[in-house]
Length: 121
Image (cartoon, rainbow, N blue to C red; front, side, top):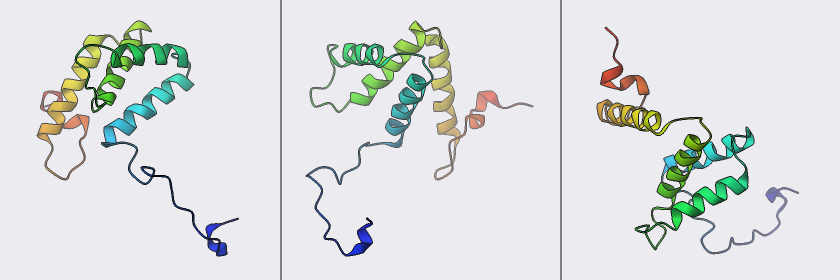
């Protein structure tokens, strides 16, 4: 039955009408973890252990505001443990994206080819 049938709409519980992710990169990181799990790179138990390790480390924000930073660190750890990407490769690619972001005009999509170090003569 669709909502167009005149049935009254029920209100969502508090908080459910707010965005799930604060930033687009958080949704992308979430989707990346799901996709890598679905491809068999790691099990959910391995993921839970890696994420749990990160969120329990000293210095993590008690309010959870850096939760997706922990998410990324857990992913980077698993990528290295599984031999999918060495930490230096992840760091090098992250730096390239950062340079591309700084070189991209406001309002334009950030593309890796905008990294000034990747420009080909």
